Length: 323
Image 1 (cartoon, rainbow, N blue to C red):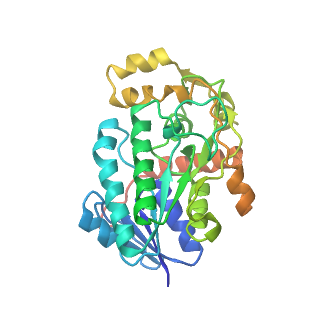
Image 2 (tube, helix red, strand yellow; image 1 turned 60 degrees about the horizontal axis):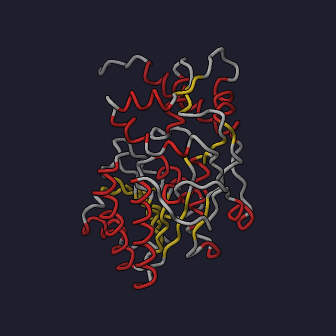
Image 3 (spheres, rainbow, N blue to C red; image 1 turned 90 degrees about the vertical axis):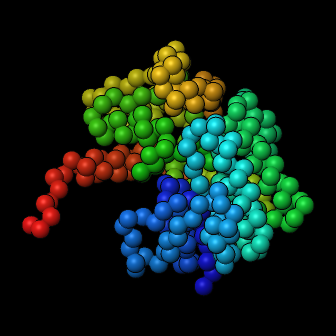
C-alpha cells in the first residue's frame, strides 16, 4: 500500500491531514518529536518519533513514502524560525530527493507582505516582516531544489487558520476558547477590517487532494477559504446565544503588552495583516477540484463545541486509581 508521511503529525494541521489521508484509504505515517501517550493500534496510523532538525532522523522519517506533507509548526518566534526552519526544510528536501518522495509543503501568507489586492497564487513575494523574510527564504530553497535537483514539490498555502483544537490559532485563543470559558472574545487591532480565515479540517482535506491528484502536482495552491468577514462578524458568531460582549485589543494595548510579553512582541510586526483588508482568494483550488470551503458559522460552531468539551473534560473529577 502507498505510504504517505505527515511530518508534524502532532499539530492540528498534521492531525487533520493524517485523518484525511487515512480516510482516503491510504497508509499513513504520523511523525512528531515524540509519540503520543495515547495511540489507537487499530486506527491504521503508524506513529514515529523523529527530530527533523537532524538529517538522519528526517531521512528515516521519509523513507518509503510516496508523499510527505510538511505540516510542522515551530514556536512563534523570529529567532526560532531563523534558527530552525532552514535546517528542518533542508533536511526534508534532502530526504525527499533521496527517496523520490513528492513533498507537499504547507505555507502561510507572510512572504506576500502588504498587499491592497486579494491574495492569489500570483501575488508577488515581497515580505515586509522578519518572519515573512524567513518564509521567503524557504520558498527560495524549494525553488532552487526543484530547478537544480528535480525536487517534486507542491506548495499549499492557507490564510490564518482556526478550527477544533487549533491551540496555536489566535482566533481560537482570543475568541473561541474565551467564549467556551464564559469570557468576552477579543479581536486584535481592528475589528472593522475583513480578514480571511482557513478552517483546519478544510486544510487537511485539501492537502490529501494535493498529495493524490496529479492535476495539483508541482504548483502553488491556495487552500479552500470562505470569503472574508470582519472581526466584528466573527466575534458575533462566537457569542451567538450568549450575553457576552465583544472587545478589541488596540495597537496601543499590544505595544504596552509587548514590554512584558514575548508573544505580544512577536505579534506586533504582523499587525499590518489586521489593520487593512486581508482577502485570501482560493477560487483556483475550488474550481479545479470542485471543493468548497466550510462556512464560518459552521466552522466556528464546531470549534466552540470542541473547546467546550475540552473545558468540561478538564473540570471533570478524576477517578482515584484502584476504585
